[in-house]
Length: 344
Image (cartoon, one colour):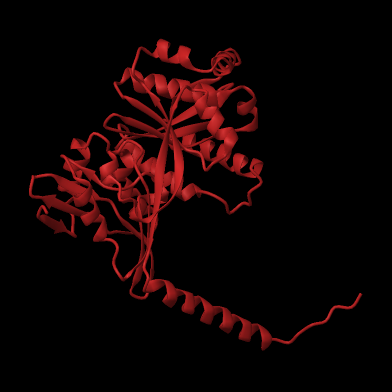
């Protein structure tokens, strides 16, 4: 068995070096994504660990503490349930990866969740606590873009051309005003989806993301859609190594009717191909068949992505007891209140 030197306080420089050297690392595996989370949400804490193995390989497991109850903490890799798991700057055996994951499976970790990286070698994924698969849809940018475009479904190509004829235009966001217009389109979409006003991301969070884009525009970009000179939606894309991931996107009802989402995806993918990226990742779809079919119409490849969750055998009954006591207390408080009878 190889020696493993565990690092519980990870130097950001080491983390950046591994993220740059790892061919399957995504933006979500970089310190930047954790930095965004920790600055946006006061209760979130970075708990990333790393290891150096006897063959010289350095591995990093990005971790965030998202909740704490007494001595128990809930961990996730990575923020918002995006691609997580180990990245490494050299070969890593399945046994070595499992040893690093086991550093997280501790008595005082109530829960640990991660969605595996679709591009990672299988030996970097510890399936000991696998419970389901998600599906990612990735377009391989492995040819001239016109050749790639011709692989798209006929309806997708037609919708793209129709969108251009009807005045859909795409550009990078340039100001807070663009972000605000995008946010208004997002809130319109939330209403269209039948969700309440508290659903989803706040303006404060998106404005926080904008502050990062101003500093790191080579890593994250909001592409906006214009119709008749007005911003009516867009897509936030993240860039790292050979990989572009679309993370958040929406358009208004009017823009949907003019096929703006298709134009967005085609033009962002075209730009990525021109810049030498190999993968345009449409991300996961929460199992929504219509969304999955939309992505498949771009001649994407389906990747089964493991979802893994560890639950502490010690914490589980203690937390269940705590919940039971809280419910009993609420019930007692309710019964102590005067009861009103309504007669019809």
